[in-house]
Image: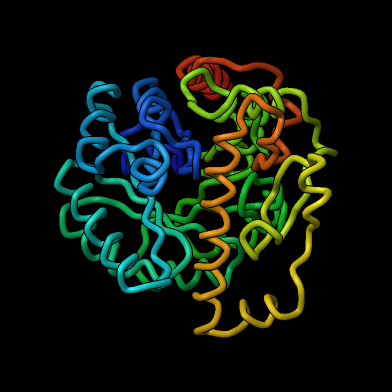
Length: 331
C-alpha cells in the first residue's frame, strides 16, 4: 500500500482517514456530512442539497455542519457547468461563502474548474476534480487542480466506464493524487482499492445507508437488500448514464434517451439546455418521491455496485472507524 500518496491526501485535506463522503443530491444533509468529518474522514457539502432539499440558508448550514463536526475539516462541491448565468453567479457566491466560513477542500464537477482553483489557491486550499478518463484528467491538471476524483464504472449516480484498476493506470501518469470513487461498500474493499495505489476513497452509497442520512428508510433498506446484479445504468433520469437500483419504476422508465436528446447532448451549446431540462425533471421527481415516501412510490434510488457488501444501516462514525481500523492494520 502506498502510504506516501495517502499521507499527501491527509495533509491536503486535514482528514485523518483517507475517506471522503462524496457530495450527493439529495442525500448530503448536514448531520451526515458532519458525522463523517467528526470521525476523521471528510464529508463534502452539496450546496443544492443543503439549501433546496434540506432547507438551510447556505451560510448558516455551513456553520451548523462546523458545529456538529466539532471544527473538523469539511469539503464543498462546486458544479462548474455554465447552464445559466443565474446558476453560475449563485455557485460563485456559494464558493465565496464557503471560503469565508473556512472550507479549504473543494471538489469540482462538470466544467472548467479554473475559477474555483484560483479562488481556493489564493487562501491556501486545494481542489480535486471529478473525471472519468484521461482526457478530462488532463484538462483538470492543466487548469491547476491538486488531485482527481476518479469516478469508475462501479459508482452510484453518475458513473464512468472503466474499472478502478484500468482508470488508475490511465490517470496515474498525470502525477496527481487520485481518489477512487465507486464500488467500495466495506472495510475489506476499502483497503483493497487503496492497495492499488489510490490516495483515498470516496464513498456515496455506503453513507446513504447510515443512521445520520435523512433519506427515507425505504431507500436505505433497498440498498441493504440489493445485490450487484440489481444495479443498472439509465440515461432517462439526467440524460447521461446514472447507476440506480433496478426497481419496477426504472423498468417502466427505460434506460436510453431518444435521438433528439442524444443530439442535444452532443452540441456545445444545446447540451446546457438539455442538462437544465433533465435537472428540472429530476427536481420534480425528487419532490414527488418525497411526498410518496412510505407509500411505496419512491422508487428512484441511485446506488452503486457496492450494495453487494452493504448489509446493514450503521452510524456514519462507526463506518469511518471500521474503515480506518482496516486501513491502519493493512501491510
